[in-house]
Image 1 (cartoon, rainbow, N blue to C red):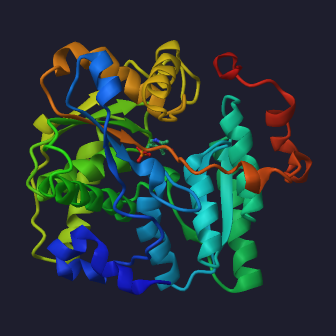
Image 2: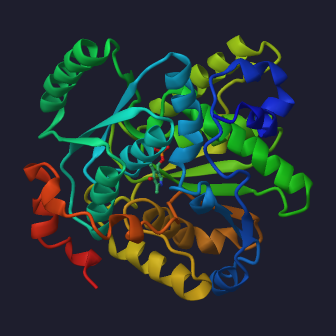
Length: 369
Ligand SMILES: *Cc1c(COP(=O)(O)O)cnc(C)c1O
């Protein structure tokens, strides 16, 4: 892979010792920043900007690419032949892992648990199959444990190695460093005059690597920007206890790798976990989230979705009266690459039977056009 791209990461420029971290350039970075003049005017927020992680990769984009640059770097450095990860049936993380693992020449096992049906679930399952990921349907956590043990045994017997395991959402301390770099990337864009330093960033929180990585990176880059993390999952994936722990673990990894990277106190006053926008369940769309998706599409042509980004934008819109004079950055964490060509010829009946119901049952009511 392209090791020379190491030099391009703003985090590595600031702390050259961090080039010792496992890393493979996979994405298209930096991602652009857009001023949302029309949508901002509608909300009475002239200082509203969009961070375009929907353009973070050529094969597949969204926030998971930044984490996978480190996670797949580690898998390749440790000479793994396969990776194994976890998610719900329509997981963007499992799909991003499948696509970039294939690009790296690694086999991929995705352990997938049930979720509410949506068009995006169908798309992601078909795209994962097209990326030659082995999709395992697991009924729940006990089922996952049994299957993982079986895969470990099979991989060892057939290929002589255990898979490299990525946690749900890729939010290990190592994966989180992708968003520490994202904050340094943002700092460069501020210094280049592309936007003023934001007062606050709004971002969806699923497994917290994105929001916590940003919090640590903003602190290290010398930005006073606050982070509003909008919960779209339940504990233990998103919880109030997790950010200080993940912050400290990612910080420790950075400090151990390059002692010039400081150890920071957890900046509690800069982090707000927003409950109240998930609705009843993960991946169950809300009226407010769908209204937010429709509004930003009409105003700016920006394509969000109902599981993560729509709910995060609904929180921002609810706060609009308090944000009038502020510079606000909405972090678009959703993939913007059209996968329809790649999946056009994939028949869902080639997937394991447990996944067929997503194609045979109707999608959830708020996802019907
Ligand atoms: C995974 C995901 C998130 C959440 O990121 P975390 O780091 O898991 O909190 C947000 N938006 C989209 C579109 C995602 O796929």
